[in-house]
Image 1 (cartoon, helix red, strand yellow):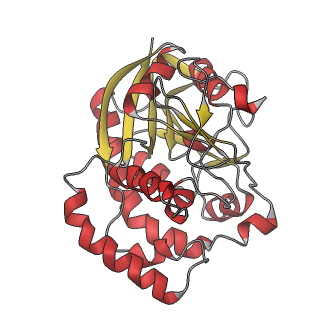
Image 2 (cartoon, helix red, strand yellow):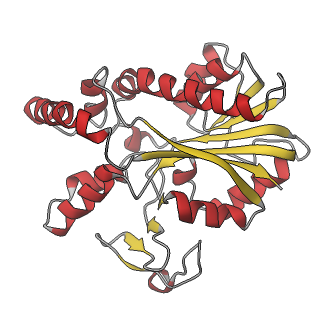
Image 3 (cartoon, helix red, strand yellow):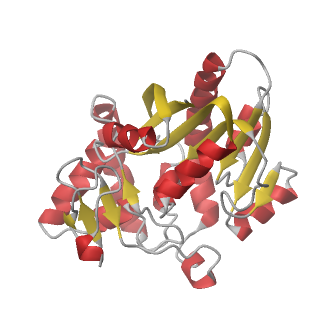
Length: 287
């Protein structure tokens, strides 16, 4: 029964959290959501304006991706090697990484895959790891804002170990439960304002978040699958350019509400640079 579920990280019992679908572990801080993905379900995609999402995210994602590729190349100074981007979406990370690696993407969303494939991106349709051949091996496997969407995260990490070469690198880039915006959303939820918390979990969208980790419990889980942390850092959560398009992606708020959100977000941006980051990345080496 879900009420008796054990924590994926420390195996302690999890308790109900801020909403009826939300659970948290008091021992290690791991959080879980009983939300179901609806990728490739037309009704779910009606809730998401994919064009606004792409316009709002592209500049920010590309800037973050360049930083991640620099980190990977410092750890693998010899050019070459095979890189797998799991959940490669529009192929932006593939474009940047292709100057240093032989790249392949996997994308489970048929609509996004069709766009990327039509643009000639080296992308394969399907889910990880079933889209791979049993003996396909990579030197780097990357999850950019993906691992938090995968319900069976243990099987995904086990598959990473199986498909990585000896000493291969695993890069996880994901939202953090220690971030200031996420913690603010939980505080709002406690006083009955639920919309921001639900937005942080992407409730109602085709691929909701089902996990929230922080840097410590994430590495504790990765250690179970013989991944050793090499380096970590934080990434920008949003920028002013593209902010309105990003706010508009879910399509559920009116014009005035979107403008208000953008106004307060622009005021808070300088302060967020000094607050705990909402996006983290960790690079592990397969032991």
